[in-house]
Image (tube, rainbow, N blue to C red):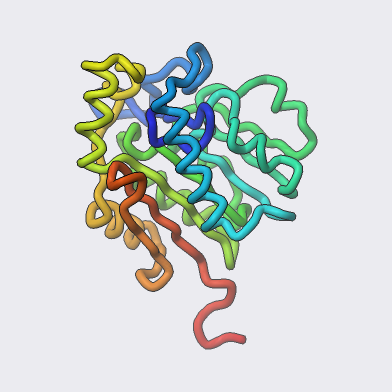
Length: 233
């Protein structure tokens, strides 16, 4: 993906064709499948990883869904020993991960692949540098909310409008990032753009924390689901 990725090859999955209709992906491979990350990407990886670990509250014994995980699912690999289960979703995922006892791989376009997962089946949902590549980001967020168990958290990272300038400079002029990744972007998100989408997806305002991230180049959201309904102990 781009410099806002959460892991070494955290990547995008485009949900539909260029005309916005249907569910065919505009991508034939996952991010990191045929190229290595640039130094710009690696710096973004490090920053995102810190935020994910801070807001996830640990991964021990949890079931985690990594949406748009990238071909090697590099961040997911770092928590594999801790989690009880890991669901990896992308256009393609490294075959060696498919044989791991803790891993479930779902390959195909987003958000269609999310519909294959059961309600309330994940404690943590990660969506890092993915929404900006989707024609149907709202539906993807709604599906991710559906996946969360009570007490769960969804962590979302997206490039901001300020970040658009930096990412396009890096890709188109300085040639420090893959131009194809930037050309696949559908939009950008400041906190005021992302917050109402999270509310429409079913998260309560009091359970949403959205802030600028990575020197204002990204927007990061932590969205929680209450462990018990209001009024219950």
